[in-house]
Amino acid sequence: MEKVVQKELQDILDSIDELANRGSLTRSRAFAAWFAITFFDVEEDDALESAAADGGNDQGIDMAFADASSEEIVILQAHCPDNLSKVTPKSKWDAVVAAIPYIKNPKLLADAGRPDLAEQLQSLQKANPTYSYTVGLITLAGC
Image (tube, rainbow, N blue to C red; front, side, top):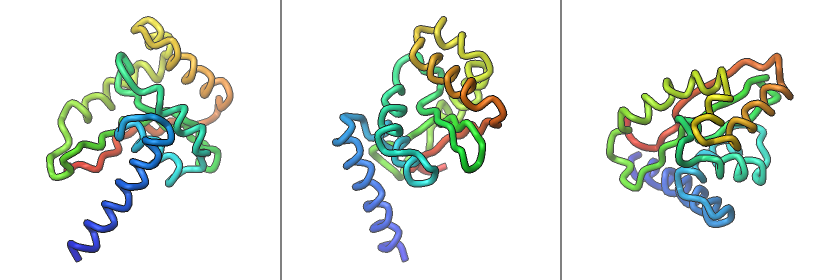
């Protein structure tokens, strides 16, 4: 059973690494894109573009997109470490909670030096005013 799980995990990592190469992204950013493509109805180009927004001053928001089928705006913090046997750091969990004020008021992102991310959230909110929010951490590390 363990060999099957290791093989499946390696297949996932291979897919993530292919996306990272195609989009010139880090593995963590590509993981966010892979998740959106695999589990939501997000086109690859859109997912790669959205995942590229991850970076400094992102206030815990690695990726944001609208999912029409569930009528949600999905906000993700992504963590794909090199050593998958390590526990997910508490800081990743804290980042999810810390992102909430910035999601409610994207102008705060612009004030923090991320006008691009603020604009992306405002655009999602304007285009989908009735959508609810889902905010979460995705990780391949231990919990």
